[in-house]
Image (cartoon, rainbow, N blue to C red; front, side):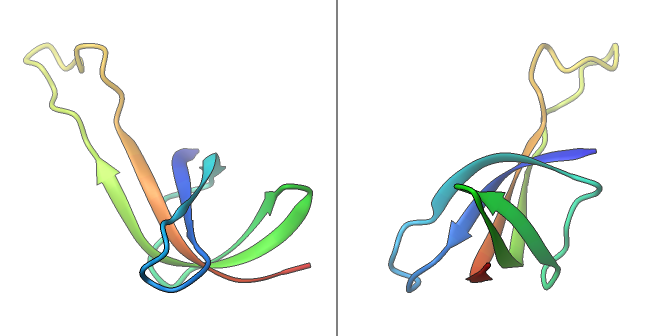
Length: 81
């Protein structure tokens, strides 16, 4: 599983992205992938624009010092049911 915050673009490029929260994906999506995500009791269809990975450095012992890597999936809203 790949967990990432879903950031949705619904208006023009000047509008702020909507933070829909953290979703679990089977794997990291790629730009151009289509996503069907449930949000506010509706299935929405999105096209992935980019994935912003936020890695954390590893210590010499292989640990992360309590930090957790994360990612944001930025997607353009294209419709809903």
